Image (cartoon, rainbow, N blue to C red; front, side, top):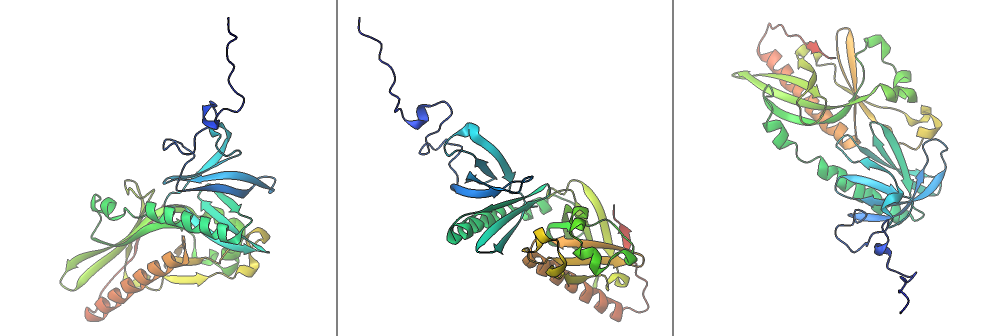
Length: 296
């Protein structure tokens, strides 16, 4: 009787139950971009090499390339994700900022790091596109002028807001990501009402607050570029954010757009709102206008 043949020790990697064939289209480790990057630990702050895979929805990382069971974690690249590419000593670091964590990754090559940054930015932008279809299904009070995610502070008194407050790194924890919608409602000939509402997410099913903007709130919209020199050491490499403040009489709310580009868009929209309100006030005098505040 011939002895039973034993399987060669040099079998193909995808024959192993924990290994996958990278050429197989069903391979979960085959994405739009993949490769080795260094990831900074959340507790020990040391750098470890991880194999990253970017697909349409997630950035996943593994301890071994090709081994599914070596998955160490993943980050959902939703609309509330922001991205920062920062120069640190002789290298670049990518900060992937989500409401629950900040992921720090880098490559030994500057070109590769920037390539990953571009790919991640494209993935986030792609996921943020379907806004029109969502807003069309929701009964907003008028035409939607602008919508998108921003960080929202708690409602505070005007005396609480100061440069020290904005520069204090621990204050980042007071910002909650919400989906904001700015609307214009035609009330009659040459008369328009403006309001800004915010929701739990982009589906706009759960409204968390709404502000009806009147002329007495036209001084509320300000943009502040916060000096980076007073940030905590671990935040020194971040680009200073742009804050927008909404205030009326004895209350104030601080908003933090994801990027400078978003900040400019929102500031422009608010400036347009203010201009329209002032024109209406000049044309119809006397008038009594108020800002109705229903912030949570």
